Amino acid sequence: MDPIVRSPYPMPPRLRAVKIISGFTVHLTYADGVVREKDLEPYLHGPIFEPIRNDPQLFASVQIDEVGDTICWPNGADIAPETLYYDGEPPWVAHPKPVRFLGKRTIRKPIKRRTVRAKAKIPA
Image (cartoon, rainbow, N blue to C red; front, side, top):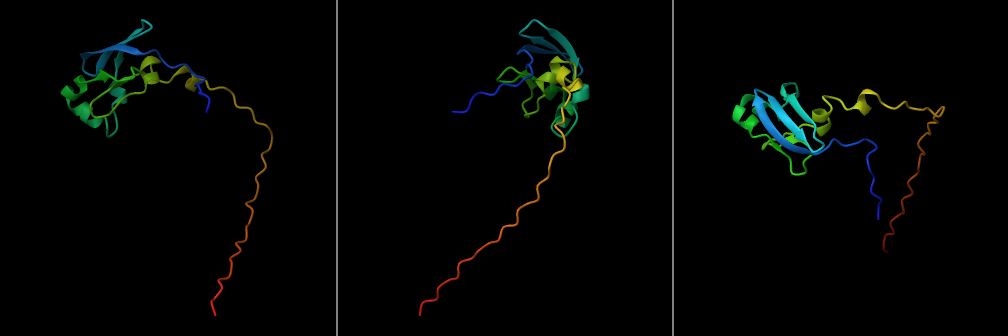
């Protein structure tokens, strides 16, 4: 059995409520008590968000997904929970850990393999 691998980055708390305020602005309530008003207009771009931008009723059908991590719409569109909770990029993206280089990497040439084919025996 494979061990459970956990992300080294914390997931945002679960969403408890989403409410439309006006236009593309929503009121988000999280399980840890954090309350945010978020303008979603900058995130509603691309083919999946086009119907949501053009139809206020579709935008108003926003709901919390089944897992409770983020908001979603009936057409399958959703916004990453980190984007909603951290006001954009999460801290670990803005300040990535430094990368250590372990010296030169050797690049191996591919091994040429010869294919040996068996000769077919012809019945006499």
